[in-house]
Image (cartoon, rainbow, N blue to C red; front, side, top):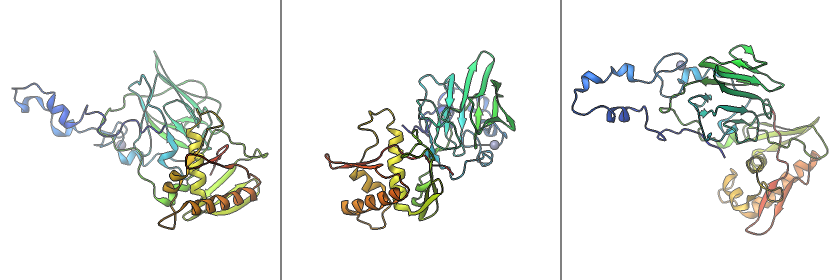
Amino acid sequence: MTAPPDLPGDSPVGCDAAAGLMQPTGMDDDDLAPPAAERAPRCPVCASPATGAVCEACRATLALPWGMCPSQLRGRAPGEPTAAALIDRWDGVWRLPRRAVVGRGPSDGPLDVLHGDVARTHALLELSGAGWRLTDLGSRTGTWIEQRRVAGATALPPVARVRIGTLELFFLAAAPSAGRAAPATALEADEITTPFAIDEPHLGAASTPLLVEAASGWGRLSLGAHGVQVPSCQLALLQLLAQRWHDDHATEPAQRGFVAIDRVLAEIPWEATQATRTNLKQLVRRTRQTLAALDVDERLEGRRGDGGAYRLRGGLRLEP
Ligand SMILES: [Zn+2]
């Protein structure tokens, strides 16, 4: 369901090649073509030449929650998009419908922010006759336009820095339709441990979120005052399963969240070059012991048939 909405090459509109094709034939190019400097796309925030929707220097000023990576931003391209979009730190362009709820989700909306600082339904962006408005939907961490905290429906300028909890984005009422960079870069194996939130935060009898702190090669899993250190393989397994649980939110409960064993073998950054099903069994056993040490056992379930599969029932709620 990840939809980096507008990858380069999706639409030729606005690129140099398309502009050339659209010129009338038989006329002198010099009369029609504007100077190259005017043709170059400009950053709507600082007006310097930009290759993306917003220039890299401006995007670098966007604040991010602790440990956030591009894969924590997910969404669905709207059926009837407007010209407006939210631009993230990685130049992802999240095109908005006329009424867009942004939150942790999961939702069918244009942007879910998988982070504990963001409420399930956090903020509403809405286009009316008077233009775009932004409303906070009662979040704990707040919604901001520039430096101002938003309560009721507040008018959005055509270009604005918007903050959803601790995540900053640029709002563009008229976002360019081309010339943007890919929103997500491939993650290094060490970064796979980045936390994210899912839709069922309660684990076991405890209502305290299970926390994951990640570092290179290992991490720490904690529930309330209890904590254990775990190697990155276990964190990678938990994240893989938690992410599938999140992605499968529309699947019936009995089937939800299973990842085939072959897929797990391919996705985990094993230390051995040729990981086997036996390696995975051992990893699952060790991970179950880790969860049992936190009194959240019986969460990592196996399933026979079709080569076997695992899931993490209830997923994980991960916070910085
Ligand atoms: Zn700029």
